[in-house]
Image 1 (cartoon, rainbow, N blue to C red):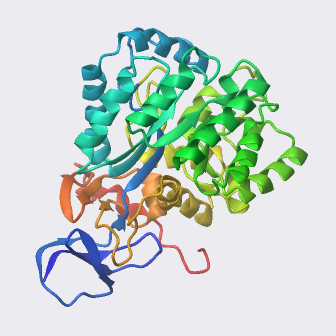
Image 2 (image 1 turned 180 degrees about the vertical axis):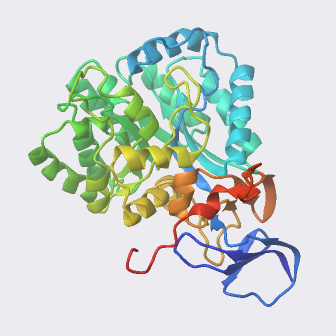
Length: 433
């Protein structure tokens, strides 16, 4: 007897009418029909069942702080950094913990069960580090939270940053971070990449750097990051986040850069919501789109995953912890609206991001952790279009969140009484697919 069986599920790979048997917190069987009983059953009614969403790039120490100490009037990256600099000295451990836990509640409701958060180590008090280490422990039963030691004000630029980052890692932070384009010179930025990769190699840790988050085509720290990744044998363990300068680089240089990144097995983390909002601010028209070269990077075989980055903080006044909102924006900005394109976008919110974070037991195969979401949509394409309700969120085989179906009641003569947007998906022929 199974603990739980989910019946009549559609899977992201296109299979439909599938049963999923769960036992002991793991997926025990996936089959067209499971002829067995269970302590509980869920009829997915032909809706999409997916592994949970994964956010490989977030700032949980700042989340939900919108308006503190004031609003970002210009909406720019630099004013956001200045605002955070004003807020940071006033932060208390209790306030950071409270906001982060509130965000995690929202994340669970959206089926987001894996998050990598950058933690600012620029304040020598390391209040943010202490707070998020506490949060990591408290949410462990329902969210896998990875923490990145992030020298927001620059590894060399900010006094005491070198020592503070090492202390944060000693305290148990999981990943080495950096921000080379924020150093005072290009050479300092390159030196910080080398130093931080060396630390990661010595400590056996992954690397995740804010890299070239600028419109400047000459900001080329991703080249250095790829080189140092190979030098220190860190292939597959390094992520370059943002990489927005690539949207301004000339094509010849990029034709050399992308193969180097592929050789280094760099994980690429664009952040579509923030990138389209903050980049291109010095442009009139034509105006750059802000997002890195998603299609080219995917076609070169690099692992591309999307981050939410910010929710209601000094940099971004919007956001909802909904990774489908991130994917929806990526479709538009990257102009990836084709059927196969949208499947790749969905992967960038799930399996690709799980690979970036090194999550074990993730997926829908037998033996994987029974962490699942049931969405009010038939397939990944419709999920990205509708950003639908998460009918159920399951962690280790137990339902931890439910959301009612989004159904409207009409009072129109001669028309249907109920309207469910998920019923409006076109039925595509085999030729169309």
